[in-house]
Image 1 (tube, helix red, strand yellow):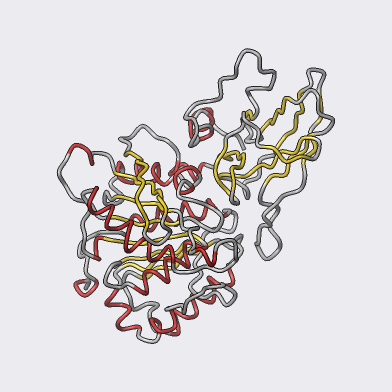
Image 2 (cartoon, helix red, strand yellow; image 1 turned 90 degrees about the horizontal axis):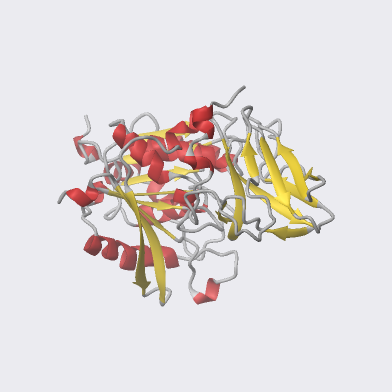
Length: 402
């Protein structure tokens, strides 16, 4: 398989939160600038300039799927070879089962480092190097020659954390040139991530730009928050409290409504998230049917018996009244891939919805199990794309759907 030059030249492979272009070194720096060179066959040649080091090894994320389809978080170690110039080189081989963004852990003399000449994003609770692995089936998230929206960084005061909090806001192309009001999606990341991940890793803004240009979805605003916030008593623990829920409802949404032209009725508001953000989506959406009329879970985990919540989760009560559920929400979308950690929970969610009598009855209910070759962020990107095409289309109220 050969990766076309058009794809290899796409800036998606080098654009990060820190820089849209490749690194330009100082003249006195001896490190290799071209630290990752994408080959025509999809392999990456990785080059680490460390002339004084004895060893360099790399641990890519996402290993070979098991017979059941699950992909471990880490792959086998790749040992680099040192050339005469003091540059350590290795090949990260192309694998169609491991495309999209892959974390790469760099170890110099067994010390974990962030290498400045490789792309970086936030993952696992701190910055990580990563590589975007090309895949023609993921081109819907690449940068294309279409009108582009804007991403704003907003800082607002949270009365729940007694701190300034930040959210990223995507506004669609044309927002700044009209007086029109737009629907809004509140989109959440997964555990150990933050508000930057849906743009830096998920490429949500490019997904939206491309969908809008193709007239495959309605233009809408996306708000991305840090869902890792906790009340003081639960900080540093494995428990999840309702701090984010309260901060979103009391602080973020009012801020967005006072600073952006957003529609304020529930049918023009949605909430969605991946993994931990999926659980937050279910809990917040189910607790506030007067606020959110549309929901989506990527890596669906409504049911989660080991989830350490400090509050009573609302889904059992909601599922006990399916007729009210189908009146409260127009779109309820769920997606996953067999490679994910919680595919068993996705299956359990499916059973719960079927037993409640929602499957095949609610027009806006959809569950999608993506092809098993797609890995975590591939699946989450695909889930967002599919959910976006369903959102905010007339009629908005499910009672009007024939």
